[in-house]
Length: 477
Image 1 (cartoon, rainbow, N blue to C red):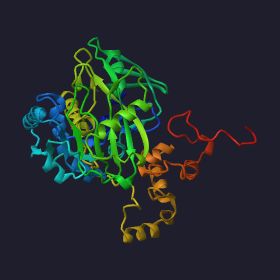
Image 2 (cartoon, helix red, strand yellow; image 1 turned 90 degrees about the vertical axis):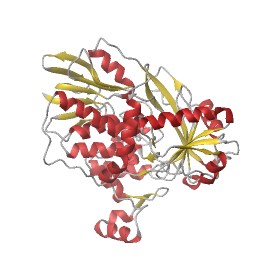
Image 3 (cartoon, one colour; image 1 turned 180 degrees about the vertical axis):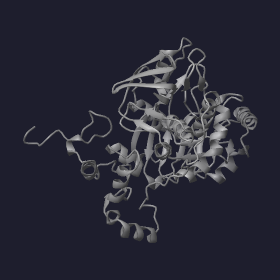
């Protein structure tokens, strides 16, 4: 019997796993997809919110501010990109200044530092590309941006190094109460555990409702995005929001930590828990609304679009803690925005809660640091020379757009929880993230994956089974 089973390997589940790996506990993570970071965590804004938007006293408020505080040190320990670039909430009409003042007051109650309201002219001095219609802005210098893939993968790798087992491609089909714990039934057999942590994203209500009579309800809230080429990544340096609505923080315009420009999302409640398709109407809407914030969105430089789902719980706050009628069953449910910002704090908060009730001894040999994959695109000439001397594969460029080499791809496969799919390589190295969107590098990446994994190229997938690239020889087909 396990001590703890975590259901879900998104950023929340991986953050919880990393915190629990500090203790002498037998912990495993069960994930239905073929890799970590395959759900909401791979398709979001990559924003580390300052913490002014959440209602004072809510879990969102408490954990947002704490998560923001933790992110910089965590990025140094686990070697993922994070930048404190600051954020603005724009006001286009003087009569709406009261809404900015309300956010300012909320932020101060929540403990956000250095918040202030500035004039439109002051905002344009910081961001010359802002619309002339901006009359006031709430400026939050503690706001930041992060790579959601690298954050999730870093947390997962560090958890794995510290003994957490990951069962990927394993779908939970039922959770049953038993004496002394739970039976978790999956597509790959049964697991038993004293404690279950439900971090299953948009499916968290379905998992919770299997064991508790106090039901929760989660609606998938779809958000669509447009990603722009790096040549226009400097259009803004801060993250630019508009005044929020009941559906969230509105359409934002932001740089990414990798130098692209990102616009989105909209917010549409849907019934499909896998509905991550984009629509012409949705993309047109976000570009129109994003264009209110900046003078000219360079739409000809869009290189891709995508959509993600947020897990919106009816009561509007995170659901974190032990279910009242299911001892040993802990939820991390309803983790929508600012969930990415909160993830490190959620991991800390829930791990503390679990060991307070079910005591465990801290490890003396916990490994707190992790080194990421070297990037030839970011390396200095001296660093490049050294990498190539140590491994000549670092001289072989595979992805021209992002300057990713064969050495980096091989490293991504051989790491703890290494890549087994094209998307897995993409998220770990950025091979295929550039302007041609994997049009050039995919065949070579498939070849490298097959070689390093010791399988036929026909077995290599984009992500889960059913997304194979190769059907067979053309003459045979």
